[in-house]
Length: 540
Ligand code: PEP
Ligand code: MG
Image (cartoon, rainbow, N blue to C red):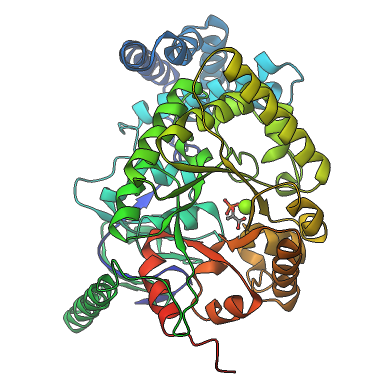
């Protein structure tokens, strides 16, 4: 049976399907009919959770210190909270529902109450309740923390997948990702591309797809369920061909990204985790053009402090051995959330509290990150990049903070080095102000994903608007051209780091516009080098 979906990431996968359920979808289990049995199950789950949390607390304390471990202490307190326990038990008795359903309902009840609270502390309790509820439900369902993925790598099918969920599942266990909802420009898709796995969205599989064999053809946007022998061998051959093409690209390692008429253009890599650095090196990228720092922390249970970030940035800088490393400051908000940030629910998160807006509002988070970056600059070629800029005032404020940070480091006699300063150009406001902004900084990086979203007023996450979300729309291309021209007038180099940078059909157009650099997923670096090496700008 053939299913068509939207192409997100190239490649072919052959394997068994694993249907991934989120905790709240999975919560619906019929009650046994006996309230006391359900309550006993709930009590037993509480005891197991307590043991797990105590072990986690000890582990975190030993590996990351008391402060990081505190989150588990808070969860332990919640688990033993008499009022919460009583509420769940009452729900089981009064409504005749299962322990899982009662926990989910109880969690929702408190979440709604707490998450909208003005009080920071209460809001943080909301996120903790969600975590604890999730843990209890997983225990009741007999799952481990990773949705019970089988040992062999699988083709993962989910209704929808968050970036943090994909990260937790891990690339070694996932051959391919297929989702019902989602968009090629979402962060989950970007991560999946970085993981080199074929991805499709917009596919609706039958309920009993779990465990059945499938072929995912990310190049054509097709999923074959229960393929026959002929199809299996045909796709195995295609996989081999892909392997041969990959080998041909690898011949370009050590060669320059230069056009036939001699214009050199660095092709950098975008990464979201330290583990991807080895891939950047193996694909011979000229450097890291975008380190999405928010993803480094989405798995953490609390905000990582200066020392932890310093260690990470230093390690990446050292591994890059003198090649460029551009660290983007936290671009949290919208579809990139972390529980510990406790960002209040917004009606319009894409236009909301995200990126530099959060950083400028939270010097307690922003300054440690900047200090870590300046300190790590001793060990490599580091620049810092600021996301979601929409005004000159933001840049003035950033520069004031940078000065404060350097003054403080100097006063504390902590060694640091100057870093290049870059701005993400991803709002139409930044495009219109490009010349003025350029005079304040060292370089621009065009975030075409968000620039498309904000220019066309189309939510990049909304799969239903896929036809309207068009990065090739002339308005977006004019925005890019204007940014390059005005950036150059203001004296900065202009690169592109959104997904459009890796579209080979656009490379020549961008070169003719005067774009100075590209930053793409590591899987696309050599392909792009190949494209650049075939372009001759002398020809019309
Ligand atoms: C972009 O918006 O194009 C970009 C590179 O940033 P992100 O995808 O992380 O929002
Ligand atoms: Mg962006």
